[in-house]
Amino acid sequence: MGSTKIDPEQFLIKEPTVVVREVGDEAFLVHAEAILHLNPLAAALWKLLDQPCSIRQAVDLLHTVYPEASRQQLDKDVELLFAQMLGKNLLQTVDLGEQF
Image (cartoon, rainbow, N blue to C red; front, side, top):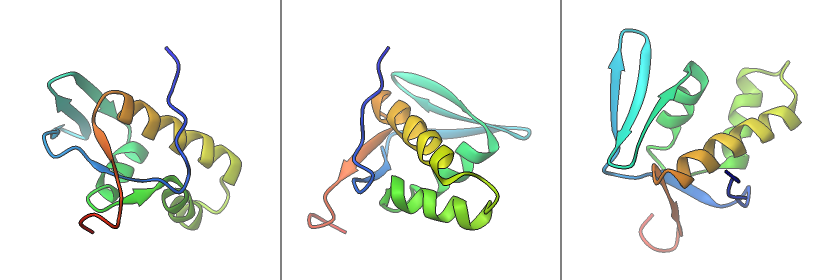
């Protein structure tokens, strides 16, 4: 299954119908079309998406928290995660001129 290419400047936000379920230290996103297990980093990124967030913003924040991590690897990881979430209808794109 191919992943969707996302513009690093495109703003994304949580799909409002997605529910987070926490079981112990584990977090899962539950939606009519998907259940997705979140590792701790993905769970932190999910919290960022309470507000519109771009890949570039997420990578900048992660690189601040984890300066030893390769920016290139963070770009790839965040883009892959956001593309998977967008492909499973867990995120939606946002035009900041609309309502934010």
